[in-house]
Image (cartoon, rainbow, N blue to C red; front, side, top):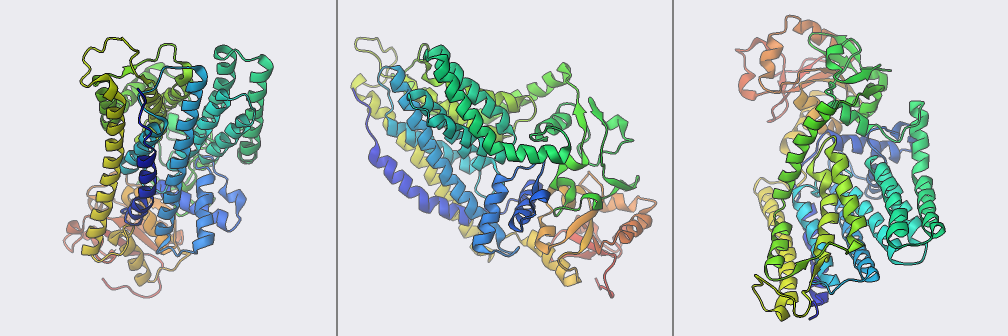
Length: 593
């Protein structure tokens, strides 16, 4: 009983991906956050060869380098750059597809090398399943409109794991250095991959030595080759970071996130005197933000004036020397919360578990005992979940772990041996493999169909409101147009108030070509004008922002609350038909309301 080859459905699927994913990228809706703006700002620095300014302990350079390459090819303006960056994400998605095909091929090759019973799913069926999982992820967490490195990281980790499995499945040494190269590139995408790369090298050596019984010389040589190439790729950036920080450093995003999410350290605008906000951490800030006023909290970023919003362009600069303490109680509480998020992630992706259950229901056998081919991939996949689970779980972080656990599970489904009882089998034994293949085809094509449906729906909705592209956003682009109408010029310094305008989405400032170098910190987004109105020194705060050289002060308010009856709204100018308002500070001439 042989599994159906499914070569033709796979080819049709891969060909159909090109127009569907391209259409989806073209009409993916606007979704830009502070992270995205930071990556775009770093891309600008790389594009003009300001290498030292682009070295960043929080955001790593490979994804911004792709954006910078796209800038060099397409020469976009600020008004249309998002379309170019969405196209970059489209290319990254196809890189994920290629990496998934490599990963599945290597997994099956290792399975055959170690010897196993016939699989229920053929190689092409597993390939189709793996690509289908990527399409589902592209609908939910690794969407084409997210300007960020998670899709690229997934592609590079899958490629690195594919090389790991190939190194285990063959006697040659070529795949070990390739593994080191891909994990080195993954580290240049996100610092998380540094630890994962070391774990993968340990798995490479340990599996060869303990399971495959290869000689110490052979396994050690492959591990050393992988380590040397990884060091050659990652080393220059580690050296640049270490020089910048005056200590050995491969990235501080992990320690900072641990301080924020586990140790309870204040995330934004921490000052040396705010000891009650240190949490379980030792804080000796090297260069904190310059505090202009304590009430309201008012800060200047001129000490590190890089990016659109320097406070988030490099959070490690203003938070240098925050060292969290390990406290098991806090860690256990956070891990409990992250475990719930893991369960929610699985529930938000019910299709693969349902498919696996259906295959077991129709008579397939899941055999993990003794089938050691799944150990490396599943072990590292679970390790990814565990590493993120210690600090902070977000769906886009753990998708690659989910994929590299699921695919080996499906590869472990075997046809029952001749004469073996099949209690509960709903179909004849000779139809088992064909039925399983049909289920995979249905899952993959239904996922692709849903992507097409959403893309066409987005296209229709944009055409109804008169927008030609999905990435256009009337409010955010309207803010930039409104600032230009007031006389604000690219390169001007401005101030902002409230997290909605400052931290959450400051892409409007990038569109206008201005820098936010002064902030009035108001973390609560609701009824912002009421809180400004309650400040006894509101005029002083405006004078301080004016003295800093800010041309305007920008905030996002409820338009229903911005009226003549509210004295604090006096002087604020609405920016087009948006919920953003600007208060002129250093503009020439008078601006009428």
